[in-house]
Amino acid sequence: MTVAEIFDAAGLTANGPVPWRSKVGESSPGIYVVALTNDSSAELPCAVDAEYLNPQDAKRWLRNEAVVYIGRAANQGLSKRLSQFYHHKHGQKSPHRGGESVILLQCDLWVYWAPTTDSIRAEQRMLAAFKDRAGKLPFANRLGGTAEKNPDTKLVEFAGRNWLASQLFRSGLEVARPERDRGIDLIAYLDMDECGSFIACPIQMKAATNATFSLSHKYRKFPDLILAYVWNVEDPAKTTCFALTYDEAHAVAKTMGYTESPSFAIGGAYTTTKPSATLRELLAPFEMNSTKWRAKLAQSVKLRAPFDARL
Image (cartoon, rainbow, N blue to C red; front, side, top):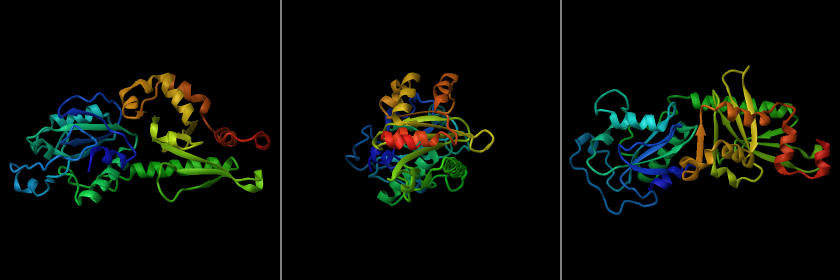
Protein backbone atom coordinates (compact mmCIF):
# COMPACT_ATOMS: atom_id res chain seq x y z
CA MET A 1 0.00 0.00 0.00
CA THR A 2 1.42 3.39 -0.93
CA VAL A 3 1.86 6.34 1.40
CA ALA A 4 -0.55 8.38 -0.72
CA GLU A 5 -3.23 5.70 -0.37
CA ILE A 6 -2.77 5.70 3.41
CA PHE A 7 -3.37 9.45 3.66
CA ASP A 8 -6.22 9.28 1.17
CA ALA A 9 -8.01 6.83 3.50
CA ALA A 10 -8.36 9.73 5.95
CA GLY A 11 -9.15 12.31 3.27
CA LEU A 12 -5.73 13.92 3.66
CA THR A 13 -2.83 14.76 1.38
CA ALA A 14 0.71 13.95 2.46
CA ASN A 15 3.34 16.65 2.90
CA GLY A 16 7.02 15.82 2.54
CA PRO A 17 8.85 13.64 2.75
CA VAL A 18 11.89 14.56 4.77
CA PRO A 19 14.58 12.09 5.85
CA TRP A 20 14.14 10.51 9.27
CA ARG A 21 15.39 12.81 12.05
CA SER A 22 14.96 15.89 9.86
CA LYS A 23 12.92 18.78 11.21
CA VAL A 24 9.32 19.15 10.08
CA GLY A 25 8.22 22.77 10.04
CA GLU A 26 4.59 22.23 11.03
CA SER A 27 3.28 23.70 14.28
CA SER A 28 -0.28 22.39 13.89
CA PRO A 29 -1.57 19.06 15.24
CA GLY A 30 -1.84 16.27 12.71
CA ILE A 31 -0.88 12.83 11.50
CA TYR A 32 2.46 11.46 10.29
CA VAL A 33 3.79 8.35 8.58
CA VAL A 34 7.26 6.80 8.62
CA ALA A 35 8.02 4.94 5.41
CA LEU A 36 10.78 3.12 3.53
CA THR A 37 10.33 5.17 0.36
CA ASN A 38 10.56 8.82 -0.66
CA ASP A 39 7.93 8.32 -3.37
CA SER A 40 4.46 8.60 -1.86
CA SER A 41 2.74 7.10 -4.90
CA ALA A 42 4.98 4.04 -5.29
CA GLU A 43 4.92 0.56 -3.85
CA LEU A 44 8.24 -0.88 -2.70
CA PRO A 45 10.21 -1.92 -5.80
CA CYS A 46 11.48 -5.00 -3.95
CA ALA A 47 11.10 -6.70 -0.60
CA VAL A 48 13.11 -5.28 2.31
CA ASP A 49 14.47 -7.73 4.85
CA ALA A 50 15.45 -6.91 8.43
CA GLU A 51 17.15 -10.05 9.74
CA TYR A 52 18.88 -8.05 12.46
CA LEU A 53 15.61 -7.51 14.37
CA ASN A 54 14.98 -9.48 17.53
CA PRO A 55 12.50 -12.38 17.14
CA GLN A 56 9.58 -10.45 18.62
CA ASP A 57 10.00 -7.49 16.25
CA ALA A 58 10.86 -9.76 13.32
CA LYS A 59 7.43 -11.40 13.59
CA ARG A 60 5.79 -8.05 12.87
CA TRP A 61 8.06 -7.04 10.00
CA LEU A 62 6.22 -6.70 6.67
CA ARG A 63 8.91 -6.96 4.03
CA ASN A 64 6.69 -5.84 1.15
CA GLU A 65 5.10 -2.79 2.78
CA ALA A 66 6.46 0.74 2.46
CA VAL A 67 4.74 2.12 5.58
CA VAL A 68 6.32 1.11 8.89
CA TYR A 69 4.50 3.43 11.32
CA ILE A 70 1.45 5.71 11.51
CA GLY A 71 1.42 8.23 14.36
CA ARG A 72 -0.37 11.36 15.45
CA ALA A 73 0.16 14.65 17.24
CA ALA A 74 -3.18 15.41 18.86
CA ASN A 75 -2.41 17.98 21.54
CA GLN A 76 0.76 19.51 20.17
CA GLY A 77 2.34 20.46 16.87
CA LEU A 78 3.74 17.88 14.50
CA SER A 79 7.20 19.43 14.70
CA LYS A 80 7.35 18.98 18.47
CA ARG A 81 5.92 15.47 18.44
CA LEU A 82 8.36 14.26 15.79
CA SER A 83 11.25 15.87 17.68
CA GLN A 84 10.21 13.80 20.69
CA PHE A 85 10.20 10.70 18.50
CA TYR A 86 13.67 11.45 17.15
CA HIS A 87 15.06 11.82 20.67
CA HIS A 88 13.34 8.80 22.16
CA LYS A 89 15.50 5.96 23.50
CA HIS A 90 14.22 2.46 22.79
CA GLY A 91 12.88 0.84 25.94
CA GLN A 92 12.14 4.11 27.76
CA LYS A 93 8.60 5.12 28.74
CA SER A 94 8.90 8.61 27.26
CA PRO A 95 8.87 10.88 25.36
CA HIS A 96 7.56 8.74 22.45
CA ARG A 97 7.18 5.08 23.34
CA GLY A 98 4.60 4.45 20.65
CA GLY A 99 6.32 3.29 17.48
CA GLU A 100 9.70 2.93 19.15
CA SER A 101 10.53 -0.15 17.05
CA VAL A 102 11.21 2.30 14.20
CA ILE A 103 14.40 3.25 16.03
CA LEU A 104 15.73 -0.29 15.56
CA LEU A 105 15.64 -0.12 11.78
CA GLN A 106 18.94 0.14 9.93
CA CYS A 107 17.68 1.48 6.61
CA ASP A 108 16.71 4.81 5.07
CA LEU A 109 13.46 6.15 6.45
CA TRP A 110 11.24 9.01 5.33
CA VAL A 111 8.64 11.06 7.18
CA TYR A 112 5.37 12.31 5.68
CA TRP A 113 2.76 14.38 7.49
CA ALA A 114 -0.55 16.22 7.21
CA PRO A 115 -2.14 18.74 9.59
CA THR A 116 -5.63 17.92 10.86
CA THR A 117 -7.77 18.87 13.86
CA ASP A 118 -9.02 15.29 14.15
CA SER A 119 -5.83 13.26 14.26
CA ILE A 120 -7.40 10.46 16.30
CA ARG A 121 -10.04 9.71 13.69
CA ALA A 122 -7.49 10.10 10.89
CA GLU A 123 -5.17 7.62 12.61
CA GLN A 124 -7.99 5.13 13.01
CA ARG A 125 -8.95 5.33 9.35
CA MET A 126 -5.38 5.03 8.14
CA LEU A 127 -4.64 2.05 10.35
CA ALA A 128 -7.87 0.34 9.31
CA ALA A 129 -7.08 0.88 5.62
CA PHE A 130 -3.58 -0.54 6.07
CA LYS A 131 -4.85 -3.57 7.97
CA ASP A 132 -7.52 -4.23 5.35
CA ARG A 133 -4.84 -4.31 2.65
CA ALA A 134 -1.89 -5.94 4.47
CA GLY A 135 -3.74 -8.10 6.98
CA LYS A 136 -1.78 -6.59 9.87
CA LEU A 137 -0.98 -3.23 11.39
CA PRO A 138 2.19 -1.45 10.26
CA PHE A 139 5.41 -2.85 11.72
CA ALA A 140 5.80 -0.35 14.59
CA ASN A 141 2.12 0.08 15.47
CA ARG A 142 1.33 -2.16 18.43
CA LEU A 143 -2.27 -0.99 18.90
CA GLY A 144 -5.00 -0.04 16.46
CA GLY A 145 -5.00 3.61 17.47
CA THR A 146 -6.43 5.19 20.60
CA ALA A 147 -9.86 6.44 19.58
CA GLU A 148 -11.65 3.63 21.39
CA LYS A 149 -9.56 4.07 24.54
CA ASN A 150 -9.98 7.86 24.50
CA PRO A 151 -13.52 8.79 23.50
CA ASP A 152 -13.01 12.55 23.99
CA THR A 153 -12.85 13.33 20.28
CA LYS A 154 -16.00 11.34 19.58
CA LEU A 155 -17.79 13.07 22.44
CA VAL A 156 -16.70 16.48 21.18
CA GLU A 157 -18.00 15.67 17.70
CA PHE A 158 -21.26 14.30 19.10
CA ALA A 159 -21.78 17.34 21.34
CA GLY A 160 -20.95 19.76 18.54
CA ARG A 161 -23.26 18.07 16.07
CA ASN A 162 -26.17 18.04 18.52
CA TRP A 163 -25.61 21.69 19.44
CA LEU A 164 -25.51 22.69 15.79
CA ALA A 165 -28.63 20.66 14.99
CA SER A 166 -30.51 22.43 17.78
CA GLN A 167 -29.51 25.80 16.34
CA LEU A 168 -30.79 24.77 12.94
CA PHE A 169 -34.07 23.52 14.39
CA ARG A 170 -34.56 26.83 16.20
CA SER A 171 -34.10 28.58 12.86
CA GLY A 172 -37.05 26.66 11.45
CA LEU A 173 -34.86 24.35 9.35
CA GLU A 174 -35.03 20.59 9.20
CA VAL A 175 -31.90 18.46 9.68
CA ALA A 176 -30.82 15.14 8.20
CA ARG A 177 -27.71 13.11 9.05
CA PRO A 178 -25.92 11.07 6.36
CA GLU A 179 -25.56 7.37 7.15
CA ARG A 180 -21.96 7.31 5.92
CA ASP A 181 -19.11 9.70 6.70
CA ARG A 182 -18.14 11.08 3.30
CA GLY A 183 -17.26 14.62 4.30
CA ILE A 184 -20.78 15.82 5.14
CA ASP A 185 -21.93 15.87 8.78
CA LEU A 186 -25.41 17.36 8.47
CA ILE A 187 -27.84 18.43 5.77
CA ALA A 188 -30.03 21.43 6.55
CA TYR A 189 -33.17 21.83 4.46
CA LEU A 190 -36.52 23.54 4.13
CA ASP A 191 -39.41 21.26 3.33
CA MET A 192 -41.71 21.76 0.38
CA ASP A 193 -44.58 23.07 2.50
CA GLU A 194 -42.62 26.26 3.16
CA CYS A 195 -41.07 27.04 -0.21
CA GLY A 196 -42.74 24.84 -2.80
CA SER A 197 -39.57 22.96 -3.57
CA PHE A 198 -36.93 20.97 -1.72
CA ILE A 199 -34.01 23.22 -0.74
CA ALA A 200 -31.05 21.57 0.99
CA CYS A 201 -27.53 22.53 1.99
CA PRO A 202 -24.70 20.21 3.14
CA ILE A 203 -22.75 21.15 6.27
CA GLN A 204 -19.27 20.06 7.30
CA MET A 205 -18.87 20.64 11.03
CA LYS A 206 -15.58 21.36 12.78
CA ALA A 207 -16.19 20.99 16.53
CA ALA A 208 -13.56 21.77 19.15
CA THR A 209 -13.30 22.24 22.89
CA ASN A 210 -11.49 25.51 22.27
CA ALA A 211 -11.08 27.73 19.20
CA THR A 212 -9.90 26.17 15.94
CA PHE A 213 -9.86 27.21 12.31
CA SER A 214 -8.97 24.90 9.43
CA LEU A 215 -9.44 24.61 5.69
CA SER A 216 -8.87 21.76 3.26
CA HIS A 217 -8.87 21.65 -0.54
CA LYS A 218 -11.04 18.53 -0.45
CA TYR A 219 -14.16 20.51 0.45
CA ARG A 220 -14.12 22.45 -2.83
CA LYS A 221 -15.85 19.52 -4.51
CA PHE A 222 -19.09 19.91 -2.54
CA PRO A 223 -21.45 22.44 -4.16
CA ASP A 224 -23.07 24.90 -1.74
CA LEU A 225 -21.16 23.45 1.23
CA ILE A 226 -21.21 25.35 4.52
CA LEU A 227 -18.24 24.95 6.84
CA ALA A 228 -19.48 25.29 10.43
CA TYR A 229 -16.80 25.89 13.07
CA VAL A 230 -18.27 25.12 16.50
CA TRP A 231 -16.08 26.38 19.35
CA ASN A 232 -16.07 25.64 23.10
CA VAL A 233 -18.47 22.71 22.91
CA GLU A 234 -17.78 21.65 26.50
CA ASP A 235 -19.01 24.96 27.88
CA PRO A 236 -22.62 25.65 26.76
CA ALA A 237 -22.37 29.23 27.98
CA LYS A 238 -19.49 29.89 25.59
CA THR A 239 -20.36 27.62 22.66
CA THR A 240 -20.53 29.54 19.42
CA CYS A 241 -20.44 28.82 15.70
CA PHE A 242 -19.05 30.48 12.61
CA ALA A 243 -20.56 29.44 9.27
CA LEU A 244 -18.72 30.11 6.03
CA THR A 245 -18.95 28.89 2.47
CA TYR A 246 -15.75 27.38 1.11
CA ASP A 247 -15.01 30.59 -0.82
CA GLU A 248 -15.52 32.69 2.31
CA ALA A 249 -13.26 30.44 4.38
CA HIS A 250 -10.64 30.50 1.61
CA ALA A 251 -10.77 34.30 1.54
CA VAL A 252 -10.18 34.41 5.31
CA ALA A 253 -7.29 31.94 4.99
CA LYS A 254 -5.80 33.96 2.14
CA THR A 255 -5.99 37.20 4.13
CA MET A 256 -4.20 35.48 7.02
CA GLY A 257 -1.52 34.15 4.68
CA TYR A 258 -2.43 30.52 5.34
CA THR A 259 -2.88 29.71 1.65
CA GLU A 260 0.80 30.54 1.04
CA SER A 261 2.00 28.08 3.69
CA PRO A 262 3.55 24.77 2.58
CA SER A 263 0.80 22.95 4.48
CA PHE A 264 -1.88 24.46 2.26
CA ALA A 265 -0.01 25.12 -0.98
CA ILE A 266 1.49 21.62 -1.10
CA GLY A 267 -0.49 19.51 1.34
CA GLY A 268 -3.87 21.06 0.63
CA ALA A 269 -4.85 21.84 4.22
CA TYR A 270 -4.10 24.27 7.04
CA THR A 271 -5.06 24.23 10.71
CA THR A 272 -4.54 26.60 13.60
CA THR A 273 -5.63 25.86 17.16
CA LYS A 274 -4.68 29.34 18.40
CA PRO A 275 -6.68 31.88 16.37
CA SER A 276 -5.12 35.32 16.54
CA ALA A 277 -7.03 38.51 17.24
CA THR A 278 -6.91 39.27 13.50
CA LEU A 279 -8.39 35.89 12.59
CA ARG A 280 -11.14 36.28 15.17
CA GLU A 281 -11.95 39.70 13.70
CA LEU A 282 -12.19 38.22 10.21
CA LEU A 283 -14.51 35.47 11.44
CA ALA A 284 -16.76 37.77 13.49
CA PRO A 285 -19.17 38.61 10.60
CA PHE A 286 -19.83 34.90 10.19
CA GLU A 287 -20.78 34.20 13.81
CA MET A 288 -24.18 32.55 13.83
CA ASN A 289 -27.27 32.42 15.98
CA SER A 290 -30.68 30.84 15.51
CA THR A 291 -31.97 33.88 13.57
CA LYS A 292 -29.22 33.84 10.89
CA TRP A 293 -29.26 30.31 9.58
CA ARG A 294 -32.11 30.67 7.10
CA ALA A 295 -30.35 33.58 5.40
CA LYS A 296 -27.11 31.62 5.35
CA LEU A 297 -28.86 28.70 3.70
CA ALA A 298 -30.32 31.05 1.09
CA GLN A 299 -26.90 32.54 0.39
CA SER A 300 -25.21 29.18 0.09
CA VAL A 301 -27.62 27.62 -2.38
CA LYS A 302 -28.00 30.88 -4.36
CA LEU A 303 -31.77 30.88 -4.12
CA ARG A 304 -34.03 32.66 -6.59
CA ALA A 305 -35.47 36.04 -5.63
CA PRO A 306 -39.06 34.76 -5.06
CA PHE A 307 -37.78 32.30 -2.52
CA ASP A 308 -35.45 34.81 -0.88
CA ALA A 309 -38.49 36.99 -0.20
CA ARG A 310 -40.08 34.17 1.81
CA LEU A 311 -37.06 34.02 4.13
